[in-house]
Image (cartoon, rainbow, N blue to C red; front, side, top):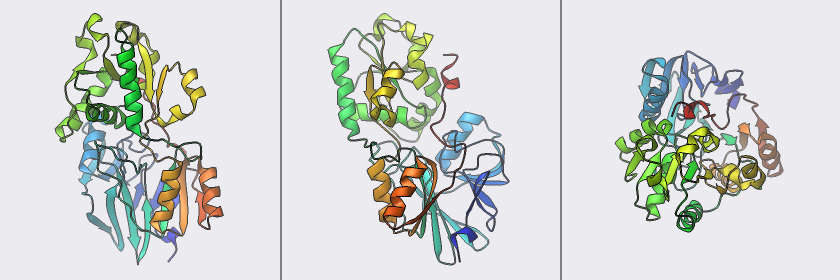
Length: 341
């Protein structure tokens, strides 16, 4: 039995011909297993979709009720069989409902990670290490320079800036699914109990997190606030909104961005970001390399990101490794979500 008898890479993404399904396909297919709700992994138009209940709900919020011909919710640890292929979903620690997908046949186990992080997150189930023979991993931050550090340190920097500039409004750019809610939860853990304002594009998913039992404290929409009362406040918004005309409703806005990319200071300067916050929902270089080792896999496939660097590292460590060169994955674009607020 070879790994390719279980999963192969195709133009539509990772495919199991024997099982009759794709994992996070980049184009419509008959049956899709979806790791999480970000738009670069979850697309509309599939014949059937299997995912966790949270991921199905999030896709429905984004694409509408008829995003797929049929849906099936899968619990963490539950096994679904497709002929002689068994599939199990395990927490990925990326965002609410995110899952790694373990595919097993005749004792050979392949785990597709989707996007993941091995760092604590108060808004989703923690990453679960799944021993396997082949590990299919992302490499968004697959360079040694990317070391994310303690997110609470970044939150303390944000709160220090708020205290230092009480007349300015702090606008924190954060992706609408996962990052926005995590930043709010981290602020609450740090003791910040004031109202946090939201861009309208973040409301639906943030309220959904609350419905799933994630405590986020007092929240309000920006559109209902006067300019004067926004001085000294924190607003969470899509990253593109920090440079938009929308910011004119704030008194002396200070642009922040919560992202692993903020480790690259030149990128922050180019984006007009005054306060870069290194907070990521992806594994950093130590997270990637430690996870690869810990799975016990002898072979590693890399889906997207800095594939060449991680593949090279794997080979120097004695792993069989190769890039899958899948086009269509990466940080989801949120420009359209910021429009119309």
